Length: 80
Image (tube, rainbow, N blue to C red):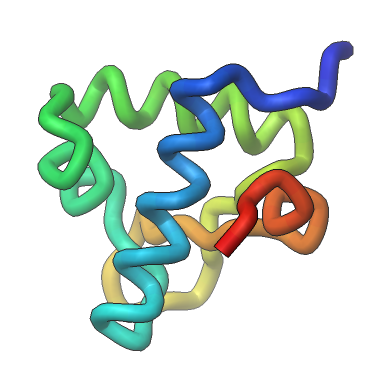
């Protein structure tokens, strides 16, 4: 499997990191979708692909289900 993120996936990684910095907590799929101007279903599809590549993870045991964080591997692809 190709572990390199597409340009859209890199954008999603950036958004996850930005929202996490802004709120202090991992963002929900809906928050990610809203920031990107896409549907939650579209965001979920991309998030699952990123998860398969090991670049982000669905965060278990959080207050709201379906929150996402960038993995260490995913952070390598973001220059911030």
